[in-house]
Image (cartoon, rainbow, N blue to C red; front, side):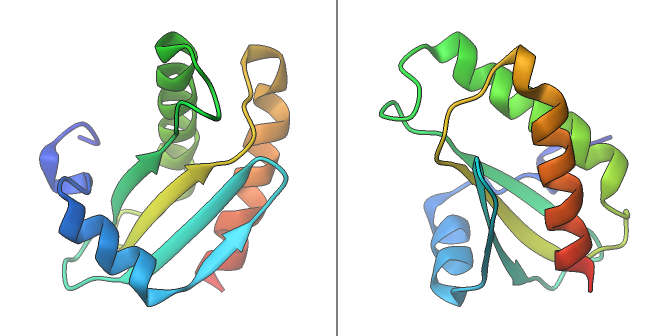
Length: 111
């Protein structure tokens, strides 16, 4: 269900809209940019630069792990565009810390 294109930010205009809205939450490893949308569901986008992590395998792991945590946390009818920007690299041994950071960010976002 979450792998369909309906739940992803696909082009630069979508990302620019979220960044220009200028609402951001942050934690130790992540920035969460968000803006409202006109759909009946949320859409996700990820920004993980090569400066943050050189290895593509690790960047892809970060995307997969964040998407998996958000799948459990976000309500389906939450209509917002969300861009997760990683500013500090993490890997498997940091998963529990990332999960708790995402939980706190989502609680702050839904309020």
